[in-house]
Length: 233
Image (tube, rainbow, N blue to C red):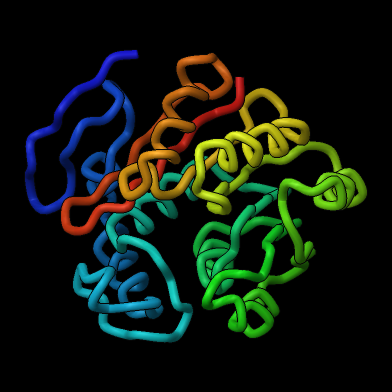
């Protein structure tokens, strides 16, 4: 597994990442990128002072995202859709799921969330706007969560977003659960690979062990959080 250190340019791409993967700078070549960055900024954040990056609204979707990273994710996924079965582990406010539903799209979304996030009170309002969403309220590591997926995933997942328990063991458990419902080529997204060392380790170990084929590391400059995308082998 080779690493490279990118040069900082245009406020977009930097830090140590896996060599040869798509980056924010790569996706930013799209003519749709600037408008989507502005859409993320205008959608509303959990905390302007914390997340910065030109975000203009505190509230709204209560996103906990770097606008450059999240806009790049949306465009990267949009180019590889459409998606039918989508799983999100860790929904926070529900805003990210709603934004992805509107800007990427999926036919049968599922959310697993324990309801303990400080913004979980927003979920009924925000997740309630996601067409066709099925929700499990509880621990993603519980037998009940797995049974919920057994009962509700039709076929195999096309896309999964893992953003729940940020401990190393917790992330690995969520990856293992998700893999049970994947096919080769299912896309798996991990959030906070820069902001959280345990998430980064889980991502790199999943790549090193051949569980995921790395495709992209979307890492902004100002207050990066880090989004990784891999394909299930």
